[in-house]
Length: 310
Ligand SMILES: *[C@@H]1O[C@H](CO)[C@@H](O)[C@H](O)[C@H]1NC(C)=O
Ligand SMILES: *[C@@H]1O[C@H](CO)[C@@H](O)[C@H](O)[C@H]1NC(C)=O
Ligand SMILES: *[C@@H]1O[C@H](CO)[C@@H](O)[C@H](O)[C@H]1NC(C)=O
Ligand SMILES: *[C@@H]1O[C@H](CO)[C@@H](O)[C@H](O)[C@H]1NC(C)=O
Ligand SMILES: *[C@@H]1O[C@H](CO)[C@@H](O)[C@H](O)[C@H]1NC(C)=O
Image 1 (cartoon, rainbow, N blue to C red):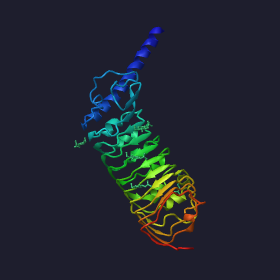
Image 2 (cartoon, protein in one colour; image 1 turned 135 degrees about the vertical axis):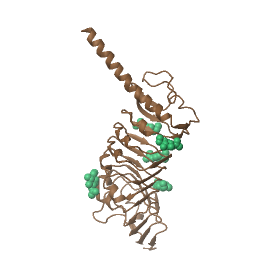
Image 3 (spheres, rainbow, N blue to C red; image 1 turned 120 degrees about the horizontal axis):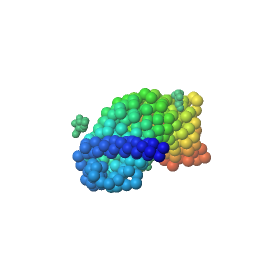
Image 4 (cartoon, rainbow, N blue to C red; image 1 turned 120 degrees about the vertical axis):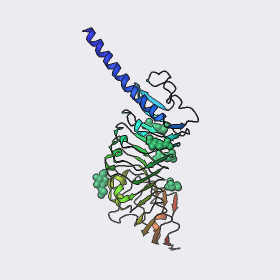
């Protein structure tokens, strides 16, 4: 009996070691695309000789967190890495929860294999040189809460199926070349808190966010400035209830129609509508202190009429 238990234990241990090895091999494969690592803080991952600590990670792997030899988190932010980022190598890390590579000079695309990172909660590739579009497989990441692709060369339309990203709270796509109708995208978002779509080529209008009560109740920050949006800012009926919205920036678009009173946004602090094609008079309610907690308001460069002394 004792012998049987012992054999089982040995089998289990060698199984774990094989898994750990594959995560390390994946990181080494990723490292082969890195041409410059000026701080040399990441020297260890690219060189497998260092000894392991209690988590099963080599001791001098900065920015890498392991558990039982499997990689849980990679944070190589702003350390001057230059090279080709092979995300398909990293996509084999089944336990990976956090992948953060922001502020480097990494090139690459989002491979379809990323969809197999079932544990991923936080993906930040901001401020790099990534290109291409978002593959539909990304919408399989049902644990994803934070997606930051800002300041890269991404483009194309967002995949249909964003609806399945039920936990997505922070979505930052600022400063890319994304296209598509915002109406369709907002109809798919579940309960976002922070959405930054600024400096892209998004078209359409914002009408569907006012239709969608689940988006309207959770959203705190919405920035759609510097796009090519047109039409009225909201559908007038029914009046949307943006209870949590604090920042609303839709400047530098081609929105038309009247400026709504915004008195239904009870938490609104920053309202930026400049450089659009709004017309008509400025709603008096915008200046009534009791209705809002506004600290910043910009309506400049529109076609608005000011009625002084009324
Ligand atoms: C992921 O890494 C980033 C960058 O180091 C950090 O700010 C964030 O808190 C981490 N998130 C998780 C879920 O570990
Ligand atoms: C990056 O990797 C891709 C695919 O492996 C390859 O086609 C490309 O030439 C590489 N680019 C550079 C600059 O090394
Ligand atoms: C996305 O990344 C940029 C640059 O790294 C940062 O300034 C921004 O705050 C991030 N967005 C979110 C929603 O965390
Ligand atoms: C609003 O979002 C929900 C998901 O929360 C979706 O099922 C519904 O179709 C959306 N409604 C509209 C009018 O787009
Ligand atoms: C909205 O985005 C633009 C461009 O990325 C930025 O300059 C602006 O400060 C943002 N607005 C707010 C209120 O954060």
